[in-house]
Length: 341
Image 1 (tube, one colour):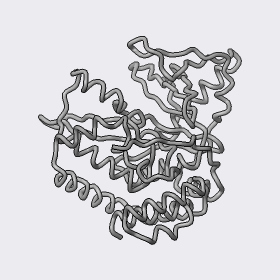
Image 2 (cartoon, one colour):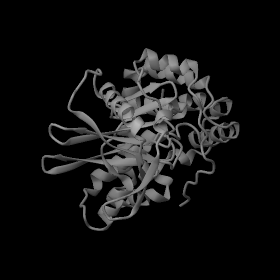
Image 3 (tube, helix red, strand yellow):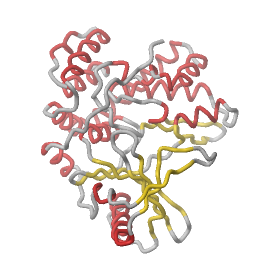
């Protein structure tokens, strides 16, 4: 089995006016009192460890005394805008701010505390990148889950997606700490694999998705949710958009192969395609509008576009891919070919 390797670090692509107008039209763009750059005015970073005392990629952020009041008040207001209509709530407070310098988006993680019941929630502030915005929008339309975020100028605010990180989930199962229903988990991986491929979402290694475990009577249901959307329609190899070909996901691949026959997996794949087709038809106007914007945008390298159209042409036995001039056209044809439009 060949494993995927991402050769280039993806550059940032700025939000162009046409995409900005789309975000305003569909209420994704709201004025917020603080920008990503404001959070960079910290005075110190303190490395964080996990519960086992091991180092993480996150650092606690410390701000100068003259910055704290403004930043904390703005972060509470942004949280209110993200989860509701921005109405004032007196009992919310910032508990902590963490920073991750790894990856493209270099996110800040904000922990909001409800002082009435000590309940807490997270959200993230990142540099706005058009690839990521397209990924969030396509996830909103094509996945079973709705996505909530705010865009303003050069800043992206995203709600926290709840679930067990894929790599942590694997460790818990392999160490015997967690029992799983092999068939149901394998079924969900087949469906997740197809969702990613149809909308060309790449880099879905185990640490870039979470597993949501839900008790259903005497059974357990699983939902795999992407949490990283930077690699939307960027890479030039078709396997990059198939989670089954990542070494990090070998656990899920082997589990699926052991739990079901090829014919059963094909049945689940067809089920997911039928659901994806329904989702597309339900939001056809918005999806077509979005894809037309992608067609006029630059979100990849010319060599990636050239190589991907050749690979998908062979994969689908569809020479029309060779006529695609950009990632938007490839994405549109891939969706319509895979869903038999």
